[in-house]
Each structure stands twice: as C-alpha cells, then as structure tokens.
Image (tube, rainbow, N blue to C red; front, side, top):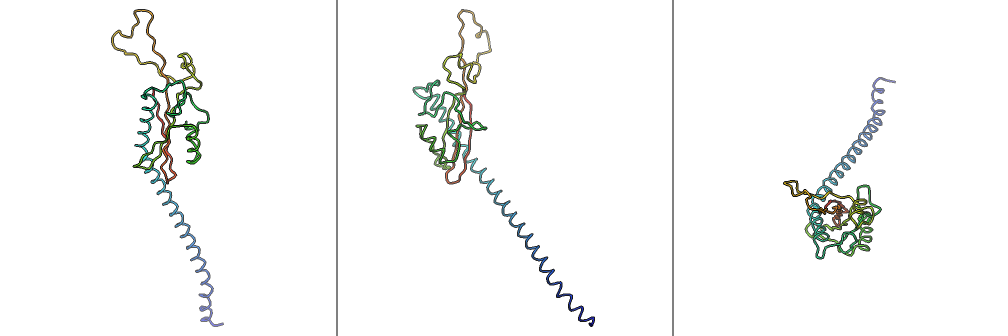
Length: 209
C-alpha cells in the first residue's frame, strides 16, 4: 500500500474520537449550566424569604402590641388564672409545643393551623392589608400547672422578683405587719405570621410581665 493512501486513512479513524470528545464536553457544559440554574434559583429563594421576613416584622410587632392591649389592658382585665379564648389566652403552658417553643395551636401547614386555631380561639386573626400578612397569636402564662395562690405561683410558674425602690429607707419595714409584694408571673406571646400566596411563615415571641 502506498504511503499516500495510509495518510488518507488516518483522519477517518479520528472523526469518531473527536465526536466522542465533543459529546463529553457538551455533557459537562450541560451539567455546569444545570448547577448554575439551581444555584441562582436557591439564591433568589433565599433573597425572597429574607424580603418576606422583613415585610412581616412591622405587622408582628403590631400583633404583639395588640396582644398586650387585649390581655393586660382590657376593660375589664383578663383573669390571669383562667383561660380566655376570646383574648387568645391560656393560664398555663400548653402541651405539644415544638422544640423552638411554638405552641401546638400555631404549628403545621396553613390549612391545618387555621382549622385548629378557629376551632379553639374565638378571636379573629388580624390581617395587615399592606403586606398581605395574616397574624395569629397565643398568650400563655409561664406555668406548668394551674396556679392561683402566691404559693402555687412560686412553685409552678416562672416569676420575676418584685421591684423595690433602692433609694432612701423606704424599703425598710418599721411597722408590723410589713407589706409583701405578690410574685410576678411571666407571660409568653407567640405570633405566627402567614404571608398569603407565598407559603411563607414567620414566628416571633415576646416575654412580658
């Protein structure tokens, strides 16, 4: 066989190798493109969730203030030793809370939560028309058992010591019997904010006395 014919046969064998390498390169480029798209989608989702969270801060603060108004400044005031479903109030901690301290009544997906909440609490949820946020809250006295007397509150509730003025001699007892201040229980307000049509949920808690 002539040398010229041999040189013409080699490119025919190399065409299949070039095609194979090109297919591998296309596969690698496709995988890189898919990874880039997923990364962009994740980044957009994170940014969107942060934006929704920022949008819910003001309504959540307003809900906490409304809960304080309803429970502690209502006329007549709410009896702290009894449940009051009209004001979303429990006189003790409820079973089934999550590891983050969210009451069972505010857990779960939107539909299940709405069913459980409306079946227990008679108060309507508060809606923020600006951000499109629905807010529901539960107020609990930080007690592990029903407590009425001061001794029961001290034994079963998280309490704060009464604040006594430290200046002068006003806090010294001269005439018996001395005035004793009652224990002050701590209350927990848990707010759930649902931004409708986004499947975004935020929780916030505040402790008051």
